[in-house]
Picture (cartoon, each protein chain N blue to C red):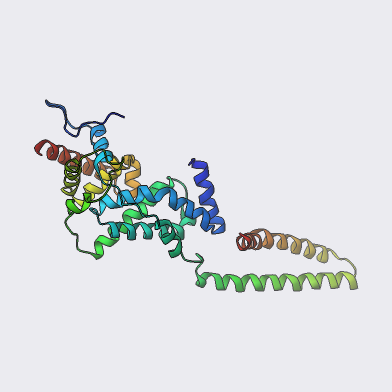
Length: 117
Length: 178
C-alpha cells in the first residue's frame, strides 16, 4: 500500500480527512502487546452476575409457588378419586396444568439451562 | 468475525453466562480498545490496561442490558469513554507526555512512520483539548461515524461536529507550522 506523506502538498491544498486518517493510522502508537490481558480480565470477572438481593426473594417466591402448586394438585387428585368429577374440579385441573407449564417454561427451564451450561 | 457470530457470542453471554464466549469477545476487541485508550490517556500503558479491564468487566456485568441497537464495538467504546471520564474526574488531568507516548510503542500499522513523525502526530494530538482528542481519535483512528461518536460520547451532533472541526483546524495548523 502506498503511504501518504505526512506533509501536505505545497500550495492551497488542506490536510483532508483521508490524509489525517492515514497519518493517525500510520503514526500513532499502538498499546504494547500484553499476552496475559485476556486472562487477567477473565480472572477478574465476577462469578455470578445476579445480585443476591434479587436472587433470594425470587427463590423464596418460586419455592412457595411450587409448593402451593403441588398442594393444589394433590387436593384436586384426591377430590377426583373420592368424589365425582365436577365442573369446578375440571376447571381447577385445567388451570393447574396451565400454571405448571407456565412455571416450567418461564422460570424453571432457563434456570436449568443456565445451571447445565 | 461476522456480525452474526458476534451476536451469537453475545447471546451466549447474556443467556447462559458463558465465560468462554466472553473470552472470545475480549480477544477480538482488546487490541482496538487498548489502542484507543493508549492514545486517549497520552501513552500511559498501566492506566490503559486498567481502564480496558474495567471496560470489559462492565461489559460483562451489563451484557444483558445491551440491546444491539449499535454495534458491540461502539458499546465498548462508550463504556471505555465513560470509564476514562470517571477516572479524569477523580484525578487531576496530567499533561500528555509525547516522549512517553511514542517510546517503545509500535505504530498501528506495524511501524512505517519514523520516530520523528510519530512524535509529531503524538504532539499534535497532545495539543488538543481532551474532548477534541477523544472525538479526533474516534473519527480518524477508529473510523467511527459522527452518529456513533454521539452515542459513544453522549454529546449532541452539533457539539461533536464543532469539536471535530476545531481538532481538524488545530491539526492542520500544527502540521503546517512544524
